[in-house]
Image (cartoon, rainbow, N blue to C red; front, side):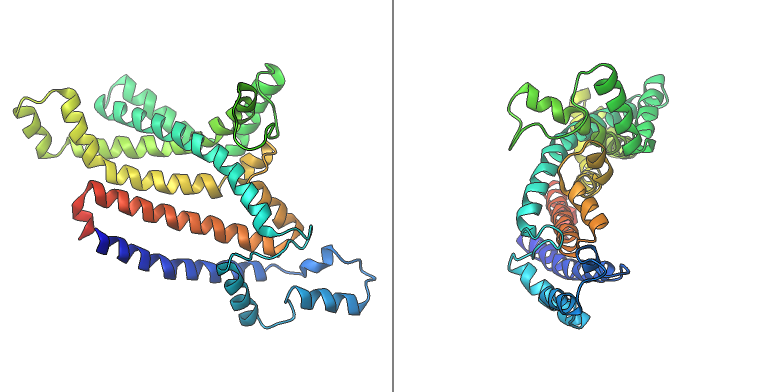
Length: 313
């Protein structure tokens, strides 16, 4: 197991290095100069040159890249061009707020998805299977932002049950009034992971049910829940892989949902940085989210290897 873990860690290093190059180059390919948003057209050339040198935009690209990479590895993510605040402080707060939505959304979506997929597979071809499968397809097909707007119109504007926008607490939610502000974004974010996990679980469980060892379990006299345990254990590696990817998407793909609900998370921060052309914030946010994505894939590999020893070979 240790050698397997070491190999996965070694594989993660070039992936992160490649991601850093892609992120840096993509941001640099954006046309225009970010300083144009800060400086008026009549700004003296001396001031333009001073700010350009301060942010290192006057150096060759490879020098800018290695300088940025070295500072990033040391934990220095630079300063926002627009606000002048340290990027690390802004990003730390934003990612923490995103986790407040992503963790409960993942728990809700994955739990419901695995349950629906297992029940649909057990009742294959019946009315229950068709209803649950239709529900999963609907979850995958509905656009996040459209469903978020519908939720706001129904539960905030019409019924006035939950706040329409904003984060109405500091730190973690501890009271019902705090929790009310996360209900709508959490339900919205959980919709697509629920649908994806439900469909994968159904397909994987059906594939396992058709294997010979299930007939052997029946012949040995095992009852339903005992057989279900062995079926889910064999289906777990594929389902866990999808769960890891979907959790990564929850962290990095919630830009539109956070924008609709005016939630101060990493998605909103990245969206604002794009409009402001705030290069340090864009680079840091994308790289940190990519790091979490690679880390999640590493954890998924470890979980799969723990469940199925054949994966370690």
